[in-house]
Structure formats: C-alpha cells, structure tokens
Image (cartoon, rainbow, N blue to C red; front, side, top):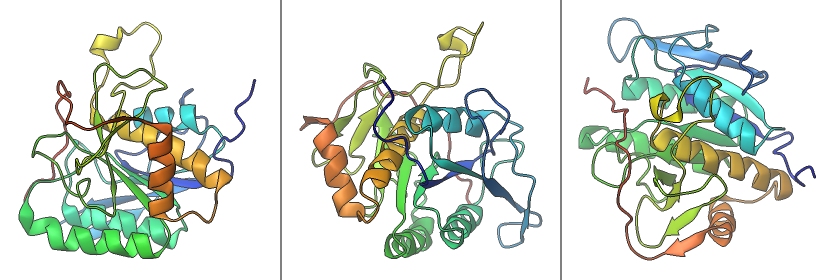
Length: 252
C-alpha cells in the first residue's frame, strides 16, 4: 500500500557534497548550486556544478528520497575534495535555500568553534522567520554541536540500535532526536563497509518532515517539532553508543 503522504511538492535542500541525480536511490533533482571558497572564507563563488564527487550527499539524498519519494530535492554543494568547508559557505548555502523557497534544509555538518556561533545563529533565525525548518546532524558529545544544538534547529544524532522506522526523542537534550545512522544498502557492498553516522539519522528526520509538511503545509517549527515528538518513542536520558560525527568546519 502506498504511503498517504510522500512529501509531494515540498522543497528539500541537501547542503552537503552535492547529489548525483542519476543514482538509483535519488531519481532526479530539481536543481541546485555549488558554493566554494576560492581565496579564503570571504571569497565565495557560486555555479551550477552541484553534482557529487564524494558520494556523501548522494547517500544522504537517497535516505531522504526513501522517506519522502515525492519531495523536490535541491543540491547545495559546499564540499569539494573533502568533507570540510567554511562556515561562510554553509551560511551562503542556507541563504540560497531560503531565496529558492526551500521549506526543509538538511545539514550534515556542524562545528564546535564558538567564534562561529553568532553568525550561524543569525542565519538560523532568518530561516525560522522565512518558515523553513533546519535539520542538523550532530553527535551527542561536544564535537560538531552547532547549529544542531540551537533551539530553533532540529538536532539529530545516530543511535546504533535504532530500526529503520524508529524515531527516538530525548527530552531535555539539545540534540533531541535519534534515528538509524546508516545509508540505504548498496548491492554488493557489505553495510559495515558503507558510510555511516549522524548524517543519515538527520536525513531520516528530514524525510519525515517533508511528509508532515505535505500534510500540514502551514505548520511552523514548534508545530512540526510536536508532530515529530508524537511519532517518536520518548526517552528521558541521553543515549550512548553513537557513531562518531565525521564532519567539522575548519576554523578560518
């Protein structure tokens, strides 16, 4: 039986290493942008080479498509040769997404450098005011916690014993949701050799959110958070055994 809601018509941006639109798990994107620093963090260039050379963003997009097959995917590429970027590129990626009318922004990256907190918080506030929901991956320890730990962002960590369909809400934790931290299986590749981590847990929440926005298109972030909590199994203590969070912004 087909799901009642598929995220139809909901715009989702994946800020990551790009997306391969021809991958069997993705099946097309609506468009996108590449954002790269050419001469340091303040010299950004934008172009249309938003396809994926690393595979990470494609794997994230595949998980989102699994949960929300009808959503409109947009690729915002901020990684080139490695899974690192400048905070200025992330901020520009969020701004580009807001200008494109994106409703759900998936971030598989973060920082613990407190110098970047004010500018990241400001752009997350602009997203909130624009009616966009940000979902950010982070581990439950201190590394890579921002912007996931902001109250105006939905923070997600991976939990090893989660099932595909499971969502856990950890009351009182700034990184409030837990989900499975593995990409979709690839034929011929053992899952243990595949990518893993909080990025894919966040992607599962992003997919869920797209379906909720199809059902409740005028819902704001507090309402969406409440709907997610309603879908989740609630636990009141921080969970253990989270895979390491692989992505950290370098300091400028």
